[in-house]
Amino acid sequence: MTTKDTTTSSLESVDDIALADSMREATGLIQSELRKMIVGQEEVIEQVLLSIFVGGNSLIVGVPGLAKTLLVHTIAQVLDLKFSRIQFTPDLMPSDITGTDLIQEDAESGQRRMVFAPGPIFANIVLADEINRTPPKTQAALLEAMQEHQVTVQGRTYVLEEPFFVFATQNPIELEGTYPLPEAQLDRFMFNIIIDHLPEEDELEVVRSTTAVQVADLENVVTGSEIIAYQRLVRKVPVPDPVLRYALSLVRTSRPSGNGAPQFIEKWVAYGASVRAAQYLILGGKAKALLEGRYNVSFDDVRALAHPVMRHRILTNFHAESEQISRDHLVDQLLEAVPTPRSGL
Image: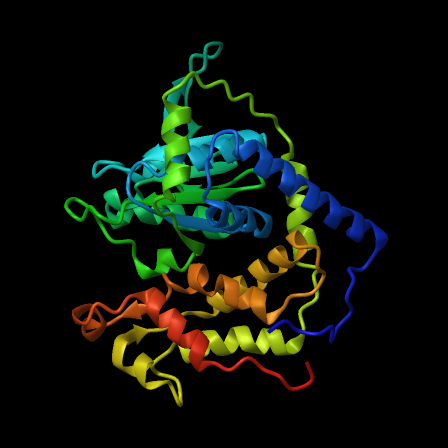
């Protein structure tokens, strides 16, 4: 069900409306450029773009060969943003990500001094490739950057250039030599994006195009300053109070410790989603509404984003694992269990 207009159905000014139009046009241009390199995966591309327009970080999960790295790299090219790829390995150290102080000698004075050498985290779009292949200590080096958009090295804080995003990839089929991401770090990812095998005809097109001579001339269609303007615009989109309450209700109902938790939550869930889930349901809904030419968030927007926002924030227990109950199945049941408000809509 879609909400009726219970709040102001327009943004604050003519300039905001013009910016919203520009954002939709830019999205179409981005998608056109991406299609030069990426076949299909429309839902995945939409979720990545929503993450960018909100200013969030996302985890992309899929087996090898599904163009996870190519997708992020191509988006960075189209957006004309500085791109950095970090290949996570068991011997990767935190300083390999953030950078470190080096002793350098001044050519004129001959004196030695400590000079900070920035690490690969100093980029606009950072691809943390196979993030679960490195120990938690190194994974944690990303936490401050993801949350605060800054890094602290040897007691000194360095601010990262805006816009800043971390896209991490993870291979779900290899367990040997991997380290599961801590829940605290998982919670900092806006979306857990699942990328799956393409339909047969799309897969055939991938084989055809990648085994021929490829000449993909990608154009820069959006600048970093425009992305920042779009992010500010997203936060101006009004949200009806019933939609806010519905998003929060989904999140609170996922917690087994809450009063009146559904039986399936008490049976299969160890810990439910944090308040960040509700924040990202609403922010993602705002961006989704703008891309669809609307200036108001609906219940449908929240429901459409429930899986990528909540699937990594619900921690299942032994009973769920033994009965092979997936987190996506639990989100499905949550959507059925939490009624969509109707009063006043």
